[in-house]
Length: 260
Image (cartoon, rainbow, N blue to C red; front, side, top):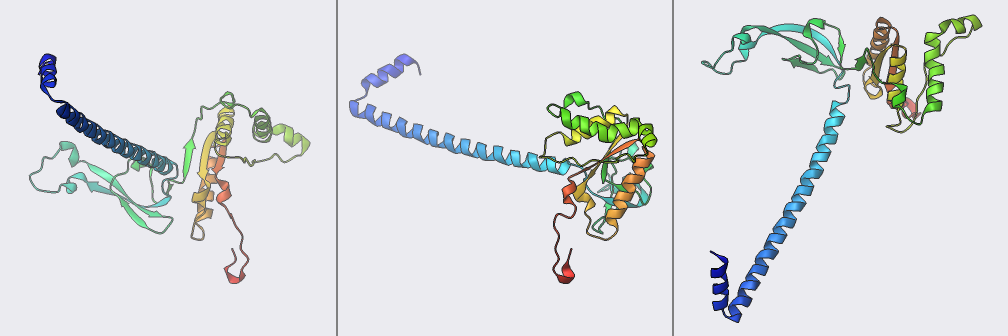
């Protein structure tokens, strides 16, 4: 329909028809506006849900994922996974893959048909996996940290000097410090300072999560700490960084036999 025909049609309409049609158009516009508003509300709701899911993903991606002991390593034919006869079979599927049986710190036994993050050839029964993060060559530098010149100097005096100039302490007969306590709100550069320190002295950076070291069963915490320090000795020199250390003994209770 051309503009001329539309103009002719409008010219032929009475005043009442024009008013009626304009009201109909107004109602349709209000309906479309309401629908647009509802769509925008739904869109904002989904955006909020996406942000929540992204935060949860970041939390779950933070190490450690799961602390577990290797119980058994088995070989399994990949062709055994075929769900039905007559299915297409890849020649590579004839190879065997290694599967792992884990026992978690909560005494649950889990079968992993696929071992993706760790080379199964490097695993052996009794190994502890998922408890720590090891970076043999940190790349951070003190120049990446701003506004912490005083803290960096104190940190270097307490950690770097005892490692790089150990003979000075021996001459004075002074026992060098072995660690420092870094405190402050999240995002103030504590982990970055520790990684920069490890990079400065060419040391391995070993990160532990404090909450994961708080185990329910007796002996689990000691095993985790023992394994961590044993690994640090093997990777010497090594900087051990225990994150969220306030998870240890956050409260004390002295109520009779239930004291903690």
